Image (tube, rainbow, N blue to C red):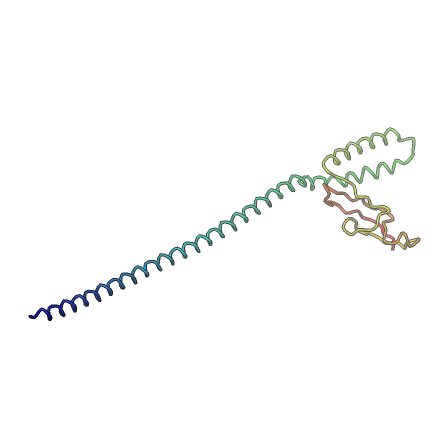
Length: 189
């Protein structure tokens, strides 16, 4: 072989080797690019999963806080209004005491008996007031369906009396600012 042919063959071989190396480098770059893309996708996927889990955590935490506040409020209400049924059962007895005191009137014959009944009544009312019982003021007040129950209506003697309570048949009561018995009243129309 001639040196020129060797030279051409060497150049062709060098050219082929360069092309093979370029193709290998290109394939390696493509593989590396695919690997980088997969890693980026994985990082993005993990970021989305993290955001989703964080959102679930915050919602669960908020739900638990609301549950805790609600149960604390229910406990407080139970403590505050737990005696409501007992006090409702005692109210007819209070009514009876009030009627008995009115029945005694100004009669001097039963003064000692009246005094004893009044003392017992006052002691009972003091105890109930300490437990949160408070009478609803009705007579002379404007009729309020949230506090009063109209059992009768009478024509008003003047315009100023219209819509006002003119008589209280049965006294109403609050227990810690909650109405436990509505006042039964007569309303002027």
